[in-house]
Length: 102
Ligand code: FES
Image 1 (spheres, protein in one colour):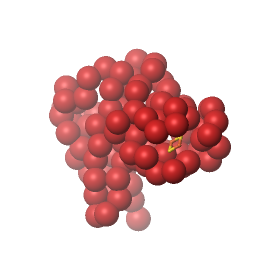
Image 2 (image 1 turned 90 degrees about the vertical axis):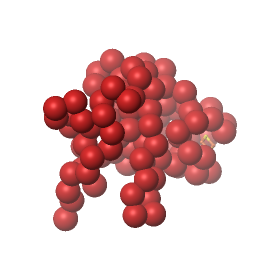
Image 3 (image 1 turned 120 degrees about the horizontal axis):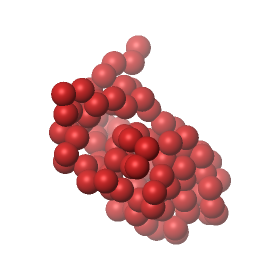
Image 4 (image 1 turned 30 degrees about the vertical axis):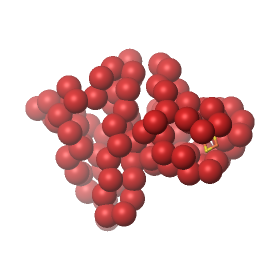
């Protein structure tokens, strides 16, 4: 069963940036883009680099280790050496607070 969890205040994530959010041994990346807020697994599907250290380019996250890229909105792997998609999670903003459903 999934439930909503508070991540942070919405203004704690700059536009075109992300934060790392850890929960019960799992790690996630929560993004603020021009299209709104999104969340994916925090580890790259290639060699598990943390995307926290990556670069947000519009609605694309570039992995810091080998520069593979993913679509932040869909999790789709876009460029090698990233071939497996990231899992995505619903995000909502209420009263200036960002929530993730996992
Ligand atoms: S670990 Fe992310 S592209 Fe290699």
